[in-house]
Length: 238
Image (cartoon, rainbow, N blue to C red; front, side):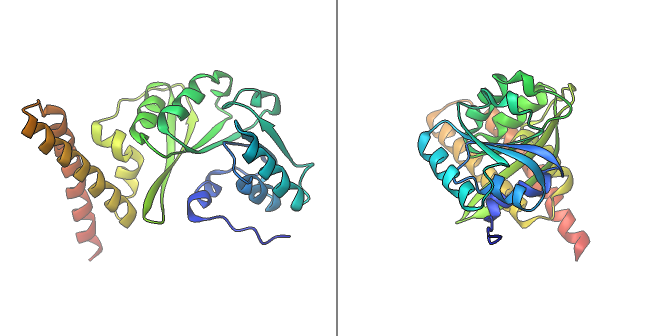
């Protein structure tokens, strides 16, 4: 069987997987990503893990249906607990909130090595993830935006370097990598507009309530500068 296809959201992880490395898919569901990576010769071995029994049982069934039980291990665990014994090189964490992803990384400092690559897709609080990475020595080497059923997803690829950096509000909300490399992307433009609208609503609400709006004003100003860059990049392509 070689008919497995990944949706756009999951597919964003593939470009960041390194050939011949050991993959850990944290919070797996059906084990689609590990199966695809191993079946197509990208990852040499994979671990499909989840905290819940249901996803692990589904993962086992799918792995067996592709005759890959000798190449993909399943483990029921919380976050990265116990994953270290498999010595994964590429660690994927999709489908979780940003704060939970940060907690998982904090509790697994064994994984903070230069040989480990993290591929993260926070469902919420992406800015929290970016700020944590920047402040704790992780370098973001790529970001990819995707859209499924009208929802935007951000995939972040990073590696531990030990070097910390500071991010502006716009960089934490939109991604420094995206601002520097993805101005012409329609999805990045959509993301930028959505973030701007969110902070405009917050600004209006605080003004009505007589609450200080300095933060919102600063964020809107920074994002407006990014929008100007987007418009200028459009002009250059015309």
